Length: 242
Image (cartoon, rainbow, N blue to C red; front, side):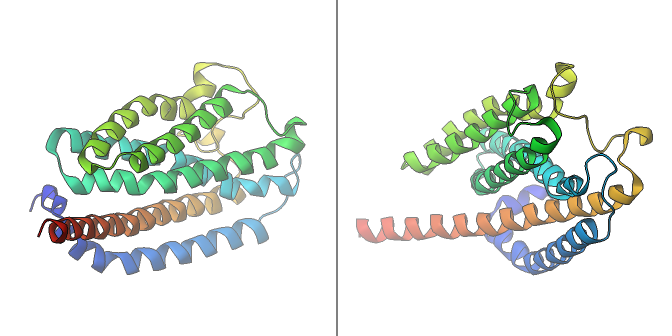
């Protein structure tokens, strides 16, 4: 069985109808476990105090914000090459979720940064590229809304997704490209010595998994809604012609 079979809206709806309840339940359980574990059963940091616990929301939301755009880029490329409508609608469905995650990351970053840096905002390379990424999300959503023809909208937003991917990459690697700025390095690394302490590491990994499952759940749910809306528009257009 080929994965491209699920580009068929009927098969996608059938499969997603089966897996969606399980994904939603699992993401809710893991989210509850991660946040209760992180906020109530981890100690205060010796330098940052209780402020460090923002890590359990800030880091997962920032990771999803970046990778949501990567997912949109891949789905957009599939649309441009293979013209599968489900991929275009999945990219459209992911954009509001990615935008909200980016906003959460910006807000929690400001709340975390103020007591650490003494300011709510700094034009740090990573912060600035993240803000630009958020603006690209808003532009992507607005472009879909501004164009009536769905195929034309999918084409133009796919181009925007390709352009915006530059800032998704910069948001991830800005601190390494410009070895300066206030923003700390990665909380998780392939180098064990660079990880946060184990007492924070394990609930943080749990929170990241929970946010990933939440993202997948919301994207599938929104994609199903977009497919239904497309069918409804097609039916209304057919009735108008008759």
